[in-house]
Image 1: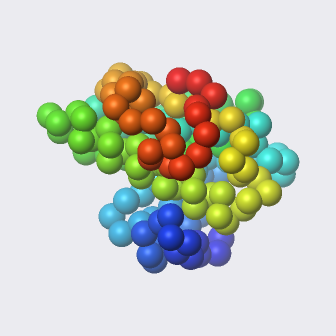
Image 2: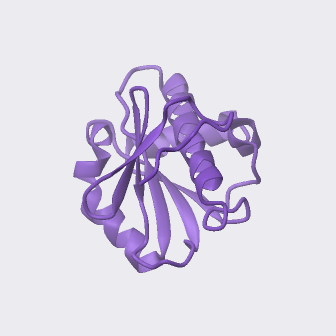
Length: 155
């Protein structure tokens, strides 16, 4: 895939690299976001932002790969997931992970505006600590504060 260029919504020098099993990896300095895309060439029906559990969340491309691939293909959904290191400050962690995933979604919209529109429904999905982080994030900040777009379709 071609490199993603900086559009003001992203950190410079971001790069998309092909991964296994339909995954793409968006690399921003030391941030990695994995993109699972449906097998069809049509635009995704919706986008899921996924955060895994405390230990497993550090390796979502390994720990949750089968599940995320199946969800993506069966539901025609694009899924963005980011690894994160656990810590005791869950508020700060929720802000960091939320911003990283919303930044990655903005990159997708900039790179493929016909596939990723602002009207494409967006859902948050989490496992264990990932669910807690999404809860904190949505309670503390409005979606537009993080990403500048409309409300979530669901959590």
